[in-house]
Length: 307
Image 1: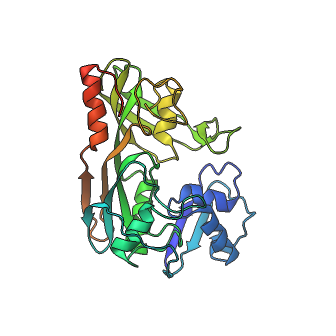
Image 2: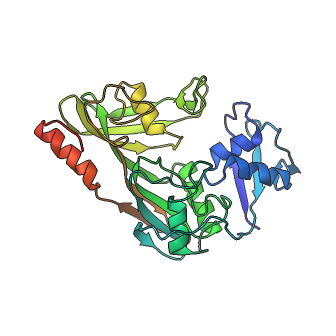
Image 3: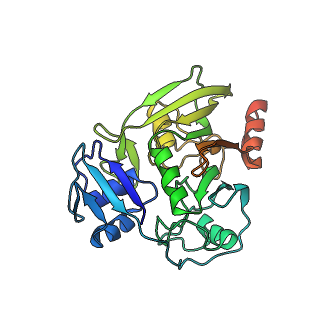
C-alpha cells in the first residue's frame, strides 16, 4: 500500500478533510473523508477523524488504497494525446470540456474520454470520479494536462506540482495595456461571501504568479503567465486583482466585454516535469487553438473581435 505524506503549513484552522483536498490535488474532499472514515489517515502515528484540525509542523500520512474498478462510463470522444507511455499521458483539452464528472455533468467530460482511450490504465488515487486526474483546468480554459496511469506516477506528479518543481506556463489575453512584466504574490482563499468564487484574502494560501508581456493591442494585452503555485482559479484571480482581468472571464472579469468569446482567453501552453519513473525532465508545448489565434489576429488588425 502506497503512502502519501503531507507536511502541514498554514492550515487556517481547516478540518483535515478539507485541508487534504486543498493540499493534495489528487484527492477530492469526499475521497479524503472516505479515507478518514476508513482509518487510513494518520497524524503523529495516530488515526484521526474528519473533525480533526491539523496544526503547523505536523505530518499527515495517508495510506492510499489499491486501484478499484470504475463506474463512470467510457465515451468515444476524440482527444488530442500529445504524449503517452505506460506511466502517464499528456493531453490537450479543448475549450468547453469539463475535466471530470460532477453532479451536473456526468458525461462528455475528459474523464469519460480517458476511460475509453486508456481503459482501466488510470490511477485510482482520486477515486472513481477523477481517475488519472492529477491537476485540473477550468472548463473554458484550453490546453495541456498531465494524466497519471499508475498510482506511483500520480503521487510523483502531484508532489512535483505541490513542491513547485513542475513548469506550467499559460497564455492569457487581459484587459488593458501592460508594459512591464512582474509578479503577483497574493494569498488566495474562498471568497468570504461567495463560496463558489476564489479571492485574494488575507491569511489565505500562498499564491504566486509571474507574468511577461508578449504583445499589446488596443485596450488589451497578451501575457505569458507562469505558475509558481497552483491554487484554484489562481491566474484569473491574480490578474483581476491587479486590474487586468482575463478577457471573457464570466466570474472575475468585466461585464462590458468589447471582445466576444465563449469563455476566458486562457490557454495552458506548456507543462514540464520530471518523469515519475526515469526522473528525466520532460516538457511539452501546444499550439494555440484556432479560436484563440483568430482573436489575436483580429486584435492585431484592430477590427471588431467576435466569433
